[in-house]
Length: 109
Length: 114
Image (cartoon, rainbow over all chains, first blue to last red; front, side):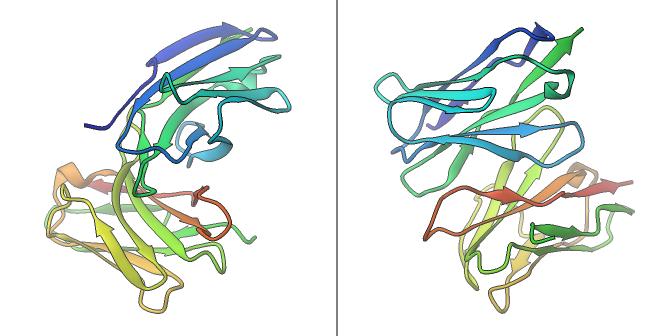
C-alpha cells in the first residue's frame, strides 16, 4: 500500500529551528512536496524535491533521501506566523499526490 | 488575481439536498483536481481532469458525487442527496503538467450538512 508518515504535532519556540520529518512508501516515486496550511485555509506550496539533497529557500529548507524514503522540512528563525500544519505529499508513479495527515506546528513565544 | 478561485466559500445545506461547487483554475493549467479534507487529515483525492477529460476518480467516491469540466476551463463538483458525512472542506487545485507537477490550491468550499 501507499503511506505517508509524519508526526501529528510539534512545539517549538519563536526564533528557534525545527525539523519536521516525513517517511513515505509509494508505488513509484516522482518527487516529494511540502505544503503549509493555516487553520481554515487552503494548502500553499512550499517546496519540491525530486533529487537527493537539500533545497534551501529562505528560512525554509527541504531534504530528500530517495533510498531511505525520507524527507524533512527545516524551518529556521521561527516566527509566530509559522504556526500552521505542514503537509508532506509524495508523487507516485501515476503522478498522483499521496498525502500525509499533516504536522501541526505550535510556536510559543 | 490569477490564482485558483472557488465558489461558494461556504455552503450550509440540509441532508438530502443537492449541492454544486465551482472551481476556476489558473488560466491555461491543463490539470484540475478535486480533494476533500476533514479536520486533522490531509487532502483526500476525489478526481482529476486533464483538459476536459476526467482521467481518474477515487474508488472510495460514492455515485452521489459527479464532476465535470465541459470546456477544459472551469469545473463543477455536484453532490446529490447530501449526508452529514459529506461535511468537509472541498478543495480544488490546478497544475500545468507540461511545466511542473506542483498543484496550486483554491481557498476551498466548506460544506456543512445539517
